[in-house]
Image (tube, rainbow over all chains, first blue to last red):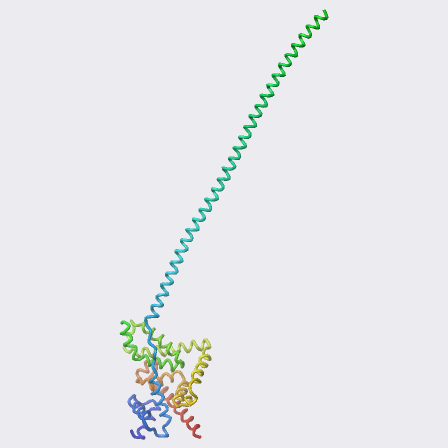
Length: 172
Length: 169
């Protein structure tokens, strides 16, 4: 390709009027071999373009792993919420049972207290009835003594009467 | 469409997507992440892919938009500085002589172009798409694309001539 033609193409190139084919001609000229000294800057440009195009994306494109990872997260949250619900449910049940047991124990204790007090009351009543019997005995004893006193008094009266009759006889 | 069908459609232009992403996002790691993300997006929308008669052009448009979004969010969160630091670190790892390399010079010049010109020069001079396809990808009129491309090429050439002359004199 003669220089004049290249220079013409370069003018078009700077005005962005070249076609892809024409640009290919320029690319070939500037990247293979001798470049006219006054066109060196184009050599740098096309050299850079060519070199830059050789850069590639070396990593593998991942499509599935992140997908499943996201799914796993979703399942994990579902599982966690279910576990939470179950534990709350069981916890409530256990708590209720505990509460019931506690109430039962309280009632039992209260009833024991009542029965204890009732027994005490019984004992007191027994004691009272004992004392009443004792009192009765005492009254019997008193009445015995009273009867004894009465007998004694009647005896004394008999003495008195005899004594009086004796005195009367003596006076006569 | 199963996975291997999808890959058959998509693999031919994966490098082009990656290169465009790298052109816009500068760092290789970010471009790799963006590429992975884009293909994953395409895979998720695989049912819709058959509706597009040109999947490649559609993918390039997606790449452009995705990179714009990334750049915007980066600017919003003031991450640009970090990004620049990273880039400098990368170049300092290279040999000093290579920094003066003509290839690197052109790379830096393109980096300094406006985003739109960057994309168009990438699509035309590196990927060699024809103008119709580029118009679709960047959603611009043919004349506007030509003007932007012409400006980009002239800017690069003039800057190279300047540098070259400085070096000589």
